[in-house]
Length: 546
Ligand code: GLN
Image (tube, rainbow, N blue to C red; front, side, top):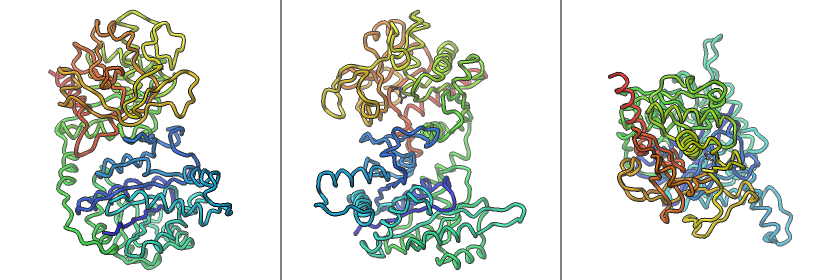
Protein backbone atom coordinates (compact mmCIF):
# COMPACT_ATOMS: atom_id res chain seq x y z
CA UNK A 1 0.00 0.00 0.00
CA UNK A 2 1.07 3.62 -0.48
CA UNK A 3 2.62 4.71 2.81
CA UNK A 4 0.37 6.82 5.01
CA UNK A 5 1.46 9.57 7.39
CA UNK A 6 -0.03 10.65 10.70
CA UNK A 7 1.23 13.88 12.23
CA UNK A 8 0.72 14.52 15.93
CA UNK A 9 0.96 18.05 17.24
CA UNK A 10 0.37 19.48 20.69
CA UNK A 11 -1.22 22.61 22.01
CA UNK A 12 -1.90 24.62 25.18
CA UNK A 13 1.10 23.36 27.13
CA UNK A 14 3.89 20.78 27.02
CA UNK A 15 4.08 17.48 28.93
CA UNK A 16 0.56 16.44 27.95
CA UNK A 17 1.92 13.09 26.81
CA UNK A 18 2.20 13.52 23.05
CA UNK A 19 4.90 10.85 22.93
CA UNK A 20 2.72 8.37 24.77
CA UNK A 21 -0.26 9.23 22.60
CA UNK A 22 1.80 8.71 19.42
CA UNK A 23 3.18 5.42 20.76
CA UNK A 24 -0.33 4.27 21.70
CA UNK A 25 -1.63 5.06 18.21
CA UNK A 26 1.25 2.97 16.88
CA UNK A 27 0.29 0.10 19.20
CA UNK A 28 -3.34 0.17 18.04
CA UNK A 29 -2.43 0.19 14.37
CA UNK A 30 0.01 -2.69 14.90
CA UNK A 31 -2.76 -4.59 16.66
CA UNK A 32 -4.69 -4.24 13.41
CA UNK A 33 -1.86 -5.91 11.52
CA UNK A 34 -0.18 -2.81 10.07
CA UNK A 35 3.55 -2.11 10.23
CA UNK A 36 4.40 1.25 11.70
CA UNK A 37 7.43 3.44 12.20
CA UNK A 38 7.56 6.48 14.47
CA UNK A 39 9.53 9.67 14.24
CA UNK A 40 9.93 12.78 16.35
CA UNK A 41 10.88 16.21 15.08
CA UNK A 42 12.11 18.37 17.93
CA UNK A 43 12.16 22.15 17.57
CA UNK A 44 15.25 22.84 19.72
CA UNK A 45 18.56 23.86 18.15
CA UNK A 46 20.83 21.21 19.71
CA UNK A 47 21.81 18.73 17.00
CA UNK A 48 20.84 15.88 19.33
CA UNK A 49 19.98 15.62 23.05
CA UNK A 50 23.28 13.83 23.81
CA UNK A 51 24.83 16.89 25.39
CA UNK A 52 21.70 18.09 27.16
CA UNK A 53 21.34 18.05 30.91
CA UNK A 54 18.88 15.33 31.96
CA UNK A 55 17.49 17.83 34.49
CA UNK A 56 16.12 19.83 31.60
CA UNK A 57 15.40 17.23 29.04
CA UNK A 58 14.91 13.94 30.82
CA UNK A 59 16.64 10.74 29.82
CA UNK A 60 18.80 10.40 26.73
CA UNK A 61 17.53 7.29 24.97
CA UNK A 62 20.07 5.23 23.01
CA UNK A 63 19.13 3.23 19.91
CA UNK A 64 20.81 0.11 18.49
CA UNK A 65 22.55 2.19 15.84
CA UNK A 66 24.06 4.42 18.51
CA UNK A 67 21.88 7.51 18.23
CA UNK A 68 21.36 9.61 21.36
CA UNK A 69 17.71 10.52 21.13
CA UNK A 70 14.71 12.00 22.86
CA UNK A 71 13.09 9.84 25.53
CA UNK A 72 9.93 9.51 23.43
CA UNK A 73 11.89 6.99 21.31
CA UNK A 74 11.72 4.81 24.41
CA UNK A 75 7.92 4.97 24.43
CA UNK A 76 7.89 4.16 20.71
CA UNK A 77 10.02 1.06 21.22
CA UNK A 78 8.14 -0.09 24.32
CA UNK A 79 4.72 0.26 22.70
CA UNK A 80 5.45 -1.02 19.19
CA UNK A 81 7.83 -3.26 17.27
CA UNK A 82 9.16 -0.31 15.27
CA UNK A 83 12.92 -0.40 14.86
CA UNK A 84 13.91 3.03 16.04
CA UNK A 85 17.11 4.39 14.51
CA UNK A 86 18.99 7.64 13.92
CA UNK A 87 16.44 8.49 11.24
CA UNK A 88 13.64 8.65 13.80
CA UNK A 89 14.70 11.75 15.70
CA UNK A 90 15.58 15.08 14.11
CA UNK A 91 15.87 18.56 15.55
CA UNK A 92 15.98 22.10 14.16
CA UNK A 93 19.72 21.78 14.75
CA UNK A 94 20.15 18.59 12.73
CA UNK A 95 17.94 19.91 9.90
CA UNK A 96 19.90 23.16 9.61
CA UNK A 97 23.15 21.23 9.96
CA UNK A 98 22.40 19.26 6.83
CA UNK A 99 21.03 22.27 4.92
CA UNK A 100 24.16 24.26 5.75
CA UNK A 101 26.45 21.33 4.86
CA UNK A 102 24.70 21.04 1.50
CA UNK A 103 25.04 24.78 0.95
CA UNK A 104 28.79 24.64 1.72
CA UNK A 105 29.18 21.72 -0.66
CA UNK A 106 27.56 23.81 -3.38
CA UNK A 107 24.49 21.58 -3.75
CA UNK A 108 22.20 24.58 -4.14
CA UNK A 109 24.13 25.76 -7.19
CA UNK A 110 24.45 29.35 -6.07
CA UNK A 111 20.76 29.79 -5.17
CA UNK A 112 19.62 31.78 -2.15
CA UNK A 113 18.99 29.28 0.63
CA UNK A 114 15.72 29.99 2.46
CA UNK A 115 13.48 28.50 5.12
CA UNK A 116 10.84 27.91 2.48
CA UNK A 117 11.59 25.87 0.39
CA UNK A 118 15.06 24.65 1.43
CA UNK A 119 14.55 24.00 5.14
CA UNK A 120 10.98 22.76 4.65
CA UNK A 121 12.15 20.50 1.80
CA UNK A 122 14.81 19.03 4.07
CA UNK A 123 12.14 18.37 6.73
CA UNK A 124 9.91 16.68 4.17
CA UNK A 125 12.87 14.61 2.97
CA UNK A 126 13.60 13.25 6.47
CA UNK A 127 9.90 12.43 6.93
CA UNK A 128 9.79 10.55 3.62
CA UNK A 129 13.03 8.73 4.36
CA UNK A 130 11.78 7.24 7.63
CA UNK A 131 8.92 5.27 6.11
CA UNK A 132 11.12 2.73 4.35
CA UNK A 133 8.67 -0.09 3.69
CA UNK A 134 6.33 0.46 6.66
CA UNK A 135 2.61 0.89 6.03
CA UNK A 136 2.46 3.98 8.15
CA UNK A 137 4.68 6.63 9.73
CA UNK A 138 3.55 8.44 12.85
CA UNK A 139 5.43 11.72 13.05
CA UNK A 140 5.34 13.65 16.30
CA UNK A 141 6.10 17.37 16.20
CA UNK A 142 7.80 18.32 19.46
CA UNK A 143 6.96 21.49 21.36
CA UNK A 144 3.64 23.31 21.32
CA UNK A 145 1.83 24.98 18.47
CA UNK A 146 2.56 28.70 18.57
CA UNK A 147 6.28 28.35 19.44
CA UNK A 148 8.51 30.26 17.02
CA UNK A 149 10.76 27.23 16.61
CA UNK A 150 8.06 24.85 15.47
CA UNK A 151 6.92 27.01 12.55
CA UNK A 152 9.15 25.47 9.82
CA UNK A 153 8.03 21.99 10.92
CA UNK A 154 4.36 22.95 10.80
CA UNK A 155 4.81 24.57 7.40
CA UNK A 156 6.52 21.40 6.13
CA UNK A 157 3.73 19.11 7.34
CA UNK A 158 1.13 21.49 5.91
CA UNK A 159 2.76 21.15 2.48
CA UNK A 160 3.05 17.42 3.01
CA UNK A 161 -0.65 16.77 2.62
CA UNK A 162 -0.61 18.36 -0.83
CA UNK A 163 2.41 16.29 -1.79
CA UNK A 164 1.07 12.88 -0.78
CA UNK A 165 -2.68 13.43 -1.12
CA UNK A 166 -5.44 13.89 1.39
CA UNK A 167 -6.15 10.18 1.91
CA UNK A 168 -2.53 9.52 2.88
CA UNK A 169 -2.09 12.18 5.53
CA UNK A 170 -3.80 12.80 8.84
CA UNK A 171 -3.37 15.47 11.50
CA UNK A 172 -4.01 14.62 15.14
CA UNK A 173 -3.84 17.40 17.71
CA UNK A 174 -3.40 16.83 21.43
CA UNK A 175 -4.78 19.52 23.69
CA UNK A 176 -5.83 20.14 27.28
CA UNK A 177 -9.36 20.49 28.61
CA UNK A 178 -8.76 21.70 32.15
CA UNK A 179 -11.22 21.23 34.97
CA UNK A 180 -11.72 24.47 36.84
CA UNK A 181 -12.63 23.66 40.42
CA UNK A 182 -14.17 26.99 41.37
CA UNK A 183 -16.50 26.84 38.37
CA UNK A 184 -16.98 23.08 38.67
CA UNK A 185 -16.55 22.89 34.92
CA UNK A 186 -14.35 21.56 32.15
CA UNK A 187 -13.17 24.43 29.95
CA UNK A 188 -12.85 24.16 26.19
CA UNK A 189 -11.45 27.62 25.43
CA UNK A 190 -7.74 26.62 25.52
CA UNK A 191 -8.52 23.87 22.98
CA UNK A 192 -10.35 26.31 20.72
CA UNK A 193 -7.40 28.69 20.87
CA UNK A 194 -4.80 26.08 20.13
CA UNK A 195 -6.77 24.72 17.18
CA UNK A 196 -7.22 28.21 15.77
CA UNK A 197 -3.45 28.70 16.16
CA UNK A 198 -2.95 25.55 14.08
CA UNK A 199 -5.45 26.71 11.47
CA UNK A 200 -3.62 30.02 11.18
CA UNK A 201 -0.66 28.10 9.76
CA UNK A 202 -2.96 26.24 7.41
CA UNK A 203 -3.50 22.97 9.26
CA UNK A 204 -7.01 21.76 10.07
CA UNK A 205 -6.71 18.87 12.53
CA UNK A 206 -8.73 15.75 11.70
CA UNK A 207 -8.82 14.30 15.21
CA UNK A 208 -8.50 15.94 18.62
CA UNK A 209 -7.17 14.12 21.65
CA UNK A 210 -8.35 16.03 24.69
CA UNK A 211 -6.27 15.43 27.76
CA UNK A 212 -8.46 15.82 30.82
CA UNK A 213 -9.02 14.71 34.40
CA UNK A 214 -12.67 13.82 33.72
CA UNK A 215 -14.35 12.26 30.71
CA UNK A 216 -15.95 14.66 28.27
CA UNK A 217 -19.69 14.17 27.86
CA UNK A 218 -21.51 14.21 24.55
CA UNK A 219 -22.48 17.84 24.88
CA UNK A 220 -18.91 18.98 25.46
CA UNK A 221 -17.59 16.88 22.58
CA UNK A 222 -20.16 18.48 20.31
CA UNK A 223 -19.19 21.93 21.46
CA UNK A 224 -15.49 21.26 20.80
CA UNK A 225 -16.35 19.71 17.42
CA UNK A 226 -18.35 22.76 16.40
CA UNK A 227 -15.76 25.33 17.43
CA UNK A 228 -12.81 23.36 16.11
CA UNK A 229 -14.41 22.21 12.88
CA UNK A 230 -14.05 18.44 13.43
CA UNK A 231 -16.62 15.62 13.63
CA UNK A 232 -17.94 14.93 17.16
CA UNK A 233 -16.67 11.31 16.94
CA UNK A 234 -13.22 12.70 16.22
CA UNK A 235 -13.09 14.33 19.64
CA UNK A 236 -11.41 11.72 21.82
CA UNK A 237 -10.98 11.95 25.57
CA UNK A 238 -7.45 11.23 26.77
CA UNK A 239 -8.39 10.77 30.39
CA UNK A 240 -5.72 10.38 33.12
CA UNK A 241 -4.97 6.70 33.73
CA UNK A 242 -3.28 4.66 36.45
CA UNK A 243 -0.84 2.90 34.12
CA UNK A 244 0.50 4.27 30.84
CA UNK A 245 -0.15 0.86 29.24
CA UNK A 246 -3.88 1.52 29.51
CA UNK A 247 -3.73 4.38 27.02
CA UNK A 248 -4.06 2.24 23.85
CA UNK A 249 -7.09 0.48 25.34
CA UNK A 250 -8.74 3.75 26.38
CA UNK A 251 -8.21 5.17 22.89
CA UNK A 252 -9.61 2.04 21.32
CA UNK A 253 -12.76 2.15 23.49
CA UNK A 254 -13.55 5.50 21.93
CA UNK A 255 -12.93 4.32 18.41
CA UNK A 256 -9.68 6.17 17.74
CA UNK A 257 -8.13 3.43 15.58
CA UNK A 258 -11.42 3.04 13.73
CA UNK A 259 -11.48 6.77 12.97
CA UNK A 260 -7.88 6.76 11.78
CA UNK A 261 -8.44 3.83 9.43
CA UNK A 262 -11.64 5.32 8.06
CA UNK A 263 -10.10 8.73 7.46
CA UNK A 264 -7.01 7.24 5.83
CA UNK A 265 -9.07 4.75 3.88
CA UNK A 266 -7.25 1.68 5.25
CA UNK A 267 -8.89 -1.74 5.45
CA UNK A 268 -7.62 -3.92 8.28
CA UNK A 269 -8.73 -6.70 10.58
CA UNK A 270 -10.22 -5.78 13.96
CA UNK A 271 -7.44 -5.05 16.44
CA UNK A 272 -6.16 -7.91 18.62
CA UNK A 273 -5.73 -6.37 22.01
CA UNK A 274 -5.69 -9.36 24.36
CA UNK A 275 -1.94 -8.87 25.06
CA UNK A 276 -2.62 -5.33 26.18
CA UNK A 277 -5.60 -6.35 28.28
CA UNK A 278 -3.57 -9.10 29.97
CA UNK A 279 -0.73 -6.70 30.63
CA UNK A 280 -2.99 -4.10 32.25
CA UNK A 281 -4.69 -6.81 34.30
CA UNK A 282 -1.30 -8.02 35.58
CA UNK A 283 -0.17 -4.50 36.42
CA UNK A 284 -3.35 -3.81 38.35
CA UNK A 285 -3.48 -7.13 40.19
CA UNK A 286 -0.03 -7.88 41.58
CA UNK A 287 0.37 -10.73 44.06
CA UNK A 288 3.46 -9.31 45.77
CA UNK A 289 5.25 -6.04 46.36
CA UNK A 290 8.92 -5.07 46.68
CA UNK A 291 10.75 -1.82 47.31
CA UNK A 292 13.89 -1.02 45.36
CA UNK A 293 16.20 1.84 46.33
CA UNK A 294 17.49 3.73 43.33
CA UNK A 295 20.56 5.60 44.47
CA UNK A 296 21.37 8.34 42.00
CA UNK A 297 21.91 11.97 41.26
CA UNK A 298 18.81 13.21 39.49
CA UNK A 299 16.60 11.60 42.07
CA UNK A 300 13.96 14.26 42.09
CA UNK A 301 13.37 13.94 38.38
CA UNK A 302 11.82 10.66 37.40
CA UNK A 303 12.02 11.66 33.75
CA UNK A 304 15.81 11.27 33.84
CA UNK A 305 15.45 7.55 34.51
CA UNK A 306 12.36 6.91 32.42
CA UNK A 307 13.41 3.64 30.78
CA UNK A 308 14.84 2.35 34.03
CA UNK A 309 11.57 2.95 35.88
CA UNK A 310 9.71 1.19 33.11
CA UNK A 311 12.14 -1.74 33.00
CA UNK A 312 11.76 -2.21 36.77
CA UNK A 313 8.02 -2.29 36.42
CA UNK A 314 8.33 -4.84 33.57
CA UNK A 315 10.53 -6.95 35.85
CA UNK A 316 7.68 -6.70 38.34
CA UNK A 317 5.10 -7.81 35.78
CA UNK A 318 7.22 -10.91 35.09
CA UNK A 319 6.98 -11.78 38.79
CA UNK A 320 3.39 -10.56 39.37
CA UNK A 321 4.96 -8.05 41.70
CA UNK A 322 4.40 -4.37 42.22
CA UNK A 323 7.72 -2.55 42.29
CA UNK A 324 7.93 0.54 44.47
CA UNK A 325 10.92 2.68 43.65
CA UNK A 326 12.47 4.63 46.47
CA UNK A 327 14.59 7.43 45.02
CA UNK A 328 17.57 8.06 47.25
CA UNK A 329 19.84 11.05 46.68
CA UNK A 330 23.42 9.76 46.60
CA UNK A 331 24.72 13.08 47.95
CA UNK A 332 22.52 12.60 51.00
CA UNK A 333 24.00 9.10 51.49
CA UNK A 334 27.45 10.63 51.09
CA UNK A 335 26.78 13.27 53.77
CA UNK A 336 25.09 10.90 56.18
CA UNK A 337 25.47 7.13 55.70
CA UNK A 338 23.94 4.16 53.94
CA UNK A 339 21.50 3.74 56.82
CA UNK A 340 19.25 6.40 55.27
CA UNK A 341 18.53 4.03 52.39
CA UNK A 342 16.29 2.30 54.94
CA UNK A 343 14.79 -1.15 54.71
CA UNK A 344 14.57 -2.10 51.04
CA UNK A 345 14.50 -5.35 49.07
CA UNK A 346 17.03 -4.39 46.45
CA UNK A 347 19.49 -1.61 45.62
CA UNK A 348 20.10 -0.23 42.17
CA UNK A 349 22.78 2.27 41.15
CA UNK A 350 21.95 3.63 37.69
CA UNK A 351 24.13 5.25 35.03
CA UNK A 352 25.77 8.55 35.83
CA UNK A 353 28.52 10.98 35.01
CA UNK A 354 30.89 13.01 37.17
CA UNK A 355 31.90 13.03 40.80
CA UNK A 356 28.79 14.33 42.56
CA UNK A 357 27.48 11.81 45.04
CA UNK A 358 30.01 9.12 44.07
CA UNK A 359 31.00 8.32 47.66
CA UNK A 360 27.32 7.87 48.50
CA UNK A 361 26.89 5.41 45.66
CA UNK A 362 29.92 3.45 46.85
CA UNK A 363 28.43 3.31 50.37
CA UNK A 364 25.21 1.96 48.90
CA UNK A 365 27.13 -0.82 47.11
CA UNK A 366 28.89 -1.71 50.34
CA UNK A 367 25.60 -2.00 52.16
CA UNK A 368 24.23 -4.31 49.47
CA UNK A 369 27.37 -6.45 49.41
CA UNK A 370 27.71 -6.81 53.16
CA UNK A 371 24.02 -7.25 53.96
CA UNK A 372 23.43 -9.66 51.05
CA UNK A 373 20.79 -7.30 49.60
CA UNK A 374 20.26 -7.87 45.84
CA UNK A 375 22.33 -5.34 43.90
CA UNK A 376 22.00 -4.19 40.31
CA UNK A 377 24.60 -1.74 38.99
CA UNK A 378 24.09 -0.23 35.58
CA UNK A 379 27.05 1.28 33.73
CA UNK A 380 28.28 3.77 36.36
CA UNK A 381 26.70 1.38 38.87
CA UNK A 382 29.12 -1.32 37.66
CA UNK A 383 32.01 1.11 38.10
CA UNK A 384 30.87 1.82 41.68
CA UNK A 385 30.70 -1.91 42.45
CA UNK A 386 34.24 -2.53 41.19
CA UNK A 387 35.62 0.46 43.09
CA UNK A 388 33.87 -0.56 46.32
CA UNK A 389 35.20 -4.10 46.08
CA UNK A 390 38.76 -2.95 45.32
CA UNK A 391 38.70 -0.57 48.28
CA UNK A 392 36.97 -2.60 50.95
CA UNK A 393 37.78 -6.19 50.02
CA UNK A 394 41.17 -5.93 48.32
CA UNK A 395 42.18 -3.18 50.74
CA UNK A 396 43.09 -0.45 48.25
CA UNK A 397 41.44 2.64 49.73
CA UNK A 398 42.65 4.80 46.85
CA UNK A 399 41.09 2.66 44.14
CA UNK A 400 38.93 4.75 41.81
CA UNK A 401 37.77 5.41 38.30
CA UNK A 402 40.08 7.68 36.35
CA UNK A 403 36.95 9.63 35.38
CA UNK A 404 36.81 10.86 38.99
CA UNK A 405 40.42 10.57 40.17
CA UNK A 406 42.89 10.65 37.28
CA UNK A 407 45.77 10.13 39.73
CA UNK A 408 44.51 7.03 41.52
CA UNK A 409 47.26 4.43 41.99
CA UNK A 410 44.57 1.76 41.41
CA UNK A 411 42.57 2.92 38.37
CA UNK A 412 40.22 -0.09 38.37
CA UNK A 413 38.00 1.77 35.89
CA UNK A 414 39.88 3.71 33.21
CA UNK A 415 39.96 4.95 29.62
CA UNK A 416 41.00 1.98 27.53
CA UNK A 417 43.70 3.13 25.11
CA UNK A 418 42.93 0.75 22.29
CA UNK A 419 40.50 -2.05 21.46
CA UNK A 420 38.81 -3.72 18.55
CA UNK A 421 35.34 -2.21 18.29
CA UNK A 422 32.73 -4.72 17.14
CA UNK A 423 30.25 -2.02 16.19
CA UNK A 424 32.46 0.15 14.05
CA UNK A 425 34.56 -2.91 13.05
CA UNK A 426 37.81 -1.07 13.54
CA UNK A 427 40.48 -0.42 16.16
CA UNK A 428 39.32 2.42 18.43
CA UNK A 429 41.70 4.58 20.42
CA UNK A 430 41.10 6.87 23.40
CA UNK A 431 43.10 9.27 25.53
CA UNK A 432 42.32 12.22 27.82
CA UNK A 433 42.62 14.60 24.90
CA UNK A 434 39.97 13.06 22.63
CA UNK A 435 37.02 15.43 22.51
CA UNK A 436 33.92 14.99 24.67
CA UNK A 437 30.90 14.33 22.43
CA UNK A 438 32.39 11.93 19.94
CA UNK A 439 34.26 9.51 22.11
CA UNK A 440 31.65 7.41 23.82
CA UNK A 441 31.00 3.77 23.15
CA UNK A 442 27.44 4.14 21.86
CA UNK A 443 24.79 1.73 20.64
CA UNK A 444 24.48 -2.05 20.41
CA UNK A 445 27.48 -4.28 21.14
CA UNK A 446 27.66 -8.07 21.23
CA UNK A 447 28.53 -9.73 24.53
CA UNK A 448 29.48 -13.32 25.21
CA UNK A 449 28.29 -14.85 28.47
CA UNK A 450 30.17 -17.30 30.65
CA UNK A 451 28.29 -20.46 31.51
CA UNK A 452 27.05 -21.03 35.01
CA UNK A 453 26.92 -17.32 35.89
CA UNK A 454 23.90 -15.27 37.01
CA UNK A 455 23.96 -13.51 33.66
CA UNK A 456 23.92 -16.76 31.72
CA UNK A 457 21.12 -18.12 33.90
CA UNK A 458 19.06 -14.97 33.28
CA UNK A 459 19.50 -14.71 29.51
CA UNK A 460 19.61 -18.49 28.88
CA UNK A 461 21.79 -17.92 25.83
CA UNK A 462 25.46 -17.57 24.99
CA UNK A 463 25.59 -14.32 23.07
CA UNK A 464 23.55 -11.19 23.65
CA UNK A 465 23.43 -7.67 22.26
CA UNK A 466 22.98 -4.65 24.51
CA UNK A 467 23.21 -0.87 24.20
CA UNK A 468 26.04 1.24 25.58
CA UNK A 469 26.67 4.89 26.39
CA UNK A 470 29.91 5.48 28.26
CA UNK A 471 33.62 6.24 27.98
CA UNK A 472 35.25 4.39 30.85
CA UNK A 473 35.87 0.64 31.06
CA UNK A 474 36.78 -2.10 33.48
CA UNK A 475 40.59 -2.32 33.77
CA UNK A 476 41.70 -5.87 32.94
CA UNK A 477 44.95 -5.36 34.85
CA UNK A 478 42.95 -5.99 38.05
CA UNK A 479 40.72 -8.73 36.68
CA UNK A 480 42.58 -11.61 38.35
CA UNK A 481 42.97 -9.90 41.72
CA UNK A 482 39.26 -9.07 41.84
CA UNK A 483 38.24 -12.56 40.69
CA UNK A 484 40.46 -14.20 43.33
CA UNK A 485 38.31 -12.54 46.00
CA UNK A 486 35.00 -13.29 44.28
CA UNK A 487 34.19 -10.40 41.90
CA UNK A 488 34.20 -12.15 38.53
CA UNK A 489 33.65 -11.08 34.96
CA UNK A 490 30.69 -13.00 33.55
CA UNK A 491 30.29 -11.37 30.16
CA UNK A 492 32.81 -9.91 27.71
CA UNK A 493 33.08 -8.66 24.15
CA UNK A 494 33.45 -11.63 21.75
CA UNK A 495 37.26 -11.29 21.79
CA UNK A 496 37.27 -11.18 25.59
CA UNK A 497 38.85 -7.71 25.70
CA UNK A 498 36.04 -5.63 27.18
CA UNK A 499 34.46 -6.71 30.46
CA UNK A 500 30.71 -6.16 30.05
CA UNK A 501 29.25 -7.84 33.16
CA UNK A 502 30.66 -8.50 36.62
CA UNK A 503 29.07 -10.41 39.46
CA UNK A 504 29.85 -11.40 43.01
CA UNK A 505 30.29 -15.04 43.96
CA UNK A 506 28.67 -16.07 47.23
CA UNK A 507 26.09 -13.29 47.15
CA UNK A 508 22.44 -14.09 46.33
CA UNK A 509 22.25 -11.61 43.44
CA UNK A 510 24.90 -8.96 42.82
CA UNK A 511 25.48 -7.93 39.21
CA UNK A 512 26.85 -4.93 37.38
CA UNK A 513 26.64 -4.41 33.64
CA UNK A 514 28.52 -1.97 31.46
CA UNK A 515 25.53 -1.55 29.15
CA UNK A 516 22.02 -0.15 29.66
CA UNK A 517 19.63 -3.12 29.65
CA UNK A 518 16.70 -0.81 30.44
CA UNK A 519 16.61 0.34 26.80
CA UNK A 520 15.66 -3.12 25.61
CA UNK A 521 12.98 -4.03 28.14
CA UNK A 522 9.42 -4.27 26.84
CA UNK A 523 6.21 -4.57 28.87
CA UNK A 524 5.28 -7.76 26.98
CA UNK A 525 8.86 -9.00 27.02
CA UNK A 526 10.49 -8.00 30.30
CA UNK A 527 14.28 -7.85 30.24
CA UNK A 528 15.90 -10.98 31.77
CA UNK A 529 18.16 -9.02 34.13
CA UNK A 530 15.29 -6.95 35.51
CA UNK A 531 13.14 -10.04 35.80
CA UNK A 532 15.87 -11.83 37.79
CA UNK A 533 16.70 -8.78 39.92
CA UNK A 534 13.06 -8.42 40.99
CA UNK A 535 12.84 -12.17 41.60
CA UNK A 536 15.91 -11.93 43.85
CA UNK A 537 14.39 -8.93 45.67
CA UNK A 538 11.25 -10.93 46.28
CA UNK A 539 13.27 -13.86 47.60
CA UNK A 540 15.25 -11.52 49.86
CA UNK A 541 12.03 -9.98 51.20
CA UNK A 542 10.54 -13.39 51.94
CA UNK A 543 13.73 -14.58 53.67
CA UNK A 544 13.63 -11.51 55.93
CA UNK A 545 10.07 -12.26 56.92
CA UNK A 546 10.70 -15.97 57.48
N1 GLN B 1 30.44 8.14 33.45
C1 GLN B 1 30.70 6.79 33.07
C2 GLN B 1 31.42 6.69 31.73
O1 GLN B 1 31.44 7.62 30.97
C3 GLN B 1 29.43 5.97 33.05
C4 GLN B 1 28.43 6.42 32.05
C5 GLN B 1 27.06 5.85 32.25
O2 GLN B 1 26.71 5.42 33.35
N2 GLN B 1 26.26 5.85 31.24
O3 GLN B 1 31.99 5.68 31.41
